Image 1: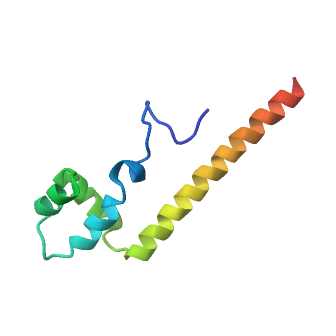
Image 2: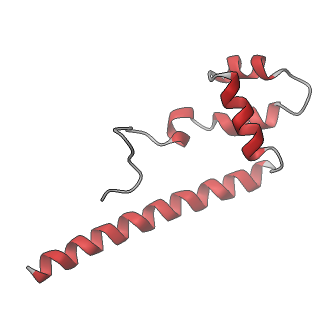
Image 3: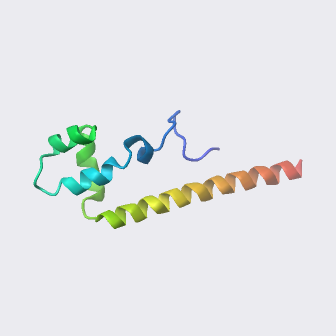
Length: 92
């Protein structure tokens, strides 16, 4: 089983949006409309609402820390898979 790939997606959400969720969360502090920000960032307004619900209470450093932990977890999962495959090859 390969972790991090789902239904043929080649890029992760972070890669696909290029950090747009950070920019959107920073700029939706009540001054701008979600539709304007969505158009500027290049996503739908529904995505903006989802990001606001998910990241609304966090500041930028917390979001980056969370993203960093996700990347580390992804690397560790890949390492576990590689080691499991090596172990299976040594058994055979």
